[in-house]
Length: 376
Image 1 (cartoon, rainbow, N blue to C red):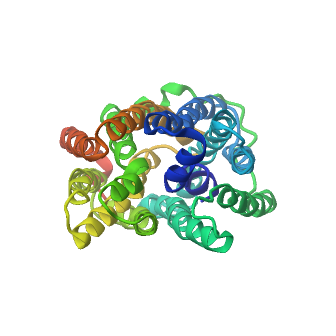
Image 2 (cartoon, rainbow, N blue to C red):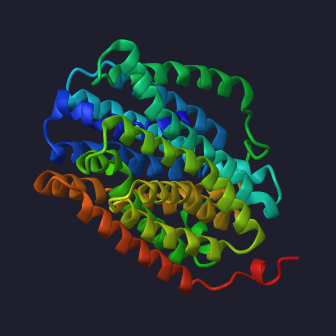
């Protein structure tokens, strides 16, 4: 919740206020949105390399520490440059937390419940996203400042400190902490359908980055109030809390491939629904996309966890997350430029839907693993 929900995903909620105070341009805002994405990409690369010899729990502790430092720095950033540095810290820390987290969760249960375990871990991200909107509204009401954003990051940093202390006290190193054998980066190639899985995660990165970061701004551009737009962002966060658990459980019971296909079909439909001039339809689209934000990565993680565990999982997941990180860099600059040029984000949302269809095609290409042919 701290590393992803706060450190990375609060920014879209505060974007309009930050733009007024420090930026003055949606194009610049789009590039600034790319800072945590770039940091996440770099952090993923480091995590993949470090995981070949480091214990995953150590990486998580370092990641939360960096995320807290980033949040604290955001709350006192005097200009766009220092804010960019703070966003980089938070994004880098998020990678060190999220890449090992699914593997740690899956290793605690059997393969028949791996998807559910990973989904429960991912629900923390959705909780952070859901809290961001109401927290922002509460802070602005309490301060009487409709453009307040630093205090939001400050409160999140304080909460992050509490989480960090608890993590240091509770989380212990794994049984393989003393293992000295280096895990090769090529471990990913032992996973069935690894090429399609990697490409699917890249498709997910492009789709989500085109839609997620500019949803509140698009709703405001469509005539929604700022408060209602933040509420819709909270709805998306609420959906993502359940998305990982629901998709994880479905993939445990039915099929990883079929569940992923369902997710991409929903991601192809949801952005178009949010462009319809009908409130309930927009809510359905936002909620559906929120389910997929956590659901698709959960399913992808479970595909790896079915074959790998421990440091092997972290190395492989870090590798495909690197592809995801590269892909998501393209969304915000393009969406920001279009938004500033046209005053709307309709085109990026339509592009997001088209890209998601490629994800559907990739799932159709995947071969059925032996574990699905012989579930017993």
